[in-house]
Image (cartoon, rainbow, N blue to C red; front, side, top):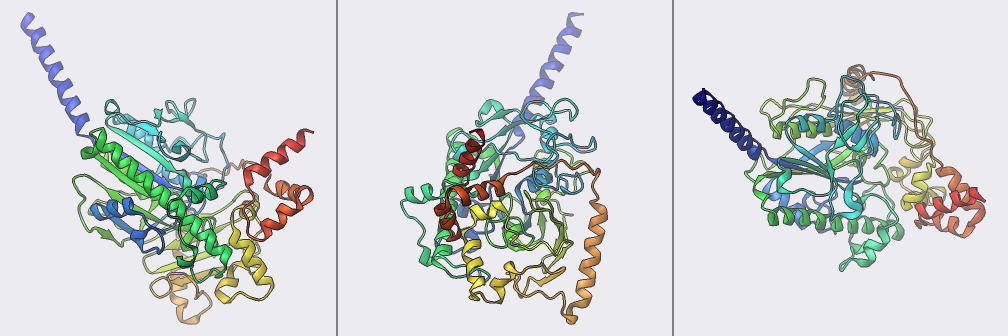
Amino acid sequence: MYKIIALLLTICSFQQIVAQKKKEQQPNIIWLMAEDISIDLEIYGMQAVKTPNLNKMAQEGVRFDNCFVTNPICSPSRSAMLTGTHQVKINSHHHRSNRDIPLDENFKPFTYWLRNAGYTCILGHHGVFNKGRKIDANFKHEAIGSWDGKTQFGLFDKYDNFEKEDQPFFAQIQLQVTHRGDWWNDVREKSKHPVDPNKVVLPKYMADHPTIRLDWAKYLDQMEYMDNEVGMIFKELEEKGMADNTIVIFIGDNGRCNIKGKGYLHDPGLHIPLIIYAPEGLQGDKIRKDVVSATDITATVLDFANVKVPNHMTGRPIFRKNFKREYVYGARDLWDEIEEKSRTITSSNWKYIRNDMPEVPFDAHQAYLEFYRPAVHVMRTLNKEGKLNKEQKFFFEPNKPAEELYDLTKDPMELTNLADNPLYATILKKMRKQTLKFDQEMKPVSNAYEPTTVHGNEVINWIKVNDSEAYKQMLNGVEIGYKKYTKAYKESLKK
């Protein structure tokens, strides 16, 4: 009898040792998500900016040159990445909508699968700007707690700190400083080497104007601040003895907040950086040109953690030998007060956009853009004065084209729309047909629609009446402070 008990204890002890050993061998994974950035890093060729930590990460890891989000606005894009499933399919495609509606029972956040595999899931970081805790998902959720999708909606286990006892851990850290905000001027003023506006190189679709140059320089100042945060996190891994077992992924959540960027299906709205570093290296090319969807990053995280990718996910692991993606299917729908519906597919050579509501112009005078895009105000004025060229006027036309087609090999900035060119009729037909196919594949699981009410236009109208001087400054490209005036407007309602 005693021998049997001893044998059982030995077996139990052995199983515990094996389980602990397996747990220790699982890699830690950190997902760094910089907000509102396109491929505007030094490693991607952006001039006037210095990003040494991301340069090093790319040189020692893998840089992806053709990674695209599935929506150019934060909450739909993040919803897709949190589930590894296209936002239209899970009915999370309208910005800041359905926040009280649970995900359909067929879908789960990817942290659910990580936690089942023994991972501690961490949100944010103690040392980055605003602690990097943003989630912004268009389904019912809570930051911390358990998940069953019915009564429990927690996505993460803890905030801000990764320690050895958390291993294996997954940490999602938002690098918020690059997001448009009232802090941009402060970051620039405190920089020891602010970017010289005279040295920036603007895209051809933007007017060369001092205010626009300065705004671009401020954007690059945020990039440099963010790069220092990346370096800080790598240093912490070294100091805590975790560097040898931690994979680090760096991406953007959507494109830059500027003309044709965030909110639009053109390249600067969808095209994001993707750099992946692993201590033991990664198989394949150091620079990859194949087309990658942001949902593929989610699937890749699960693959790194040795978790089987659920069948419902539209993403696929990018380091598998059979990985091949011909197109990324993108969508633009509701954004604050602007109702919209546009669809796109991007391949390595071609971009097709179908604008189902062409009567809604690109420059729809959306309140968010009024506050946070100096270039819109400056170029709107220049357009009225007849001082914009054809490429620059495109954004300010009274209607959008019903269809857009771009040859990315010859025209990476998407300046020449070939949709009406008969020489490209065959390609147009093919891309149109493929987009319709994706429309069917990603058909929403429900038609629930509960958007969040926004008051941006009310705030702007209040400024016009109560601070006309500030409104004049806004029209001249000055960021007068969204939070400041929203607070003043709300306080006025109490009187």
